Length: 170
Image (cartoon, helix red, strand yellow):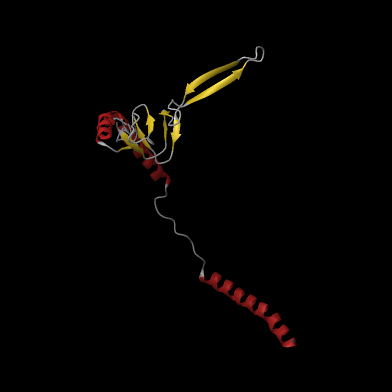
């Protein structure tokens, strides 16, 4: 009997360890005119999110194992040789969605040539829009700089004058 350890949460169709029946959900609806209750039973998978050991058949040697039915998944770790053999037999149908994506982005040769031509024309348009020679930024002349520097010195003197006078009065 193959045994597996769940590496992550799984929704599995299981047989309840206490009742030895498949887990099911019961939908009840009462008819207002007759008062009869209609019941429908649905077999539903159960979320096993903790570290759980699952098996395909009840085993008296491991009574706490949860019995599930269906195929194992890639996220189940095999615990015995029978489980490893079952995993190996199913590996061919487990295709990872990322691994199946085309390497070139799904484009054929004609589409690649079209994209290259389009990118070249775009680069030419951008190049034509740029100026041929870099424009030098005009700086401040030396006279303007010295005038601003003189104004700054005058402001410093004006700000210090009232504080010096106030300090003498105290």
